Amino acid sequence: MRFDNLLKQRESTIRERWLNLTLDTYPADSFAFLKNQKNQFLNPVGNTISRELGVLYRSLVNEVDPKAVTTSLDSILRIRSVQGFSPSQAVSFILLLKSVVREELEGELQTREQFTDLQQFELRIDQLAMQGFDVYSKCREGVFQVRLNELRRRANTIVGRLNRNDRQPEQEDDI
Image (tube, rainbow, N blue to C red; front, side, top):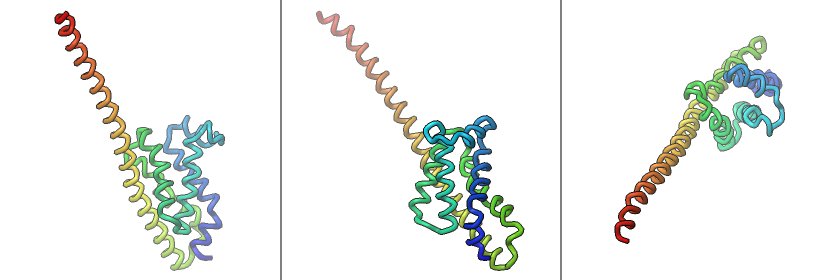
């Protein structure tokens, strides 16, 4: 059987295991909630991760629109960029797919062509991880820009108050 057909045939199992490993990067109490709460409004993080991992998996198997890949990476990494993950931890979920695929297809890979296809698939995963680092960096840059803007706003407010306080005694002396 062709390698891409194996990936398509085992998609639901691979995606489920990949989701579990990804959610396992969260604290234990969060894992249970993220995994079991299916309501998208009560669990937007778990819902987003689950949905976007599906998009990423299908893009790796079918090599779809790069814009969809960037959008999915952004959706996941925007969340992870504000959750206290280091850059490597935030992006590591992508590389977890390699071990899932190898374990899931371990007994199925028999021909040289299938192993070559596995290597090519793993190369696409590596490229996705590198793209993930770029997306994560942009997300973190956005977080820092929001913080900087807030600090500037606060500083301007303080300077404005100080300026008003400095002018008030002068106005009283003129009367």
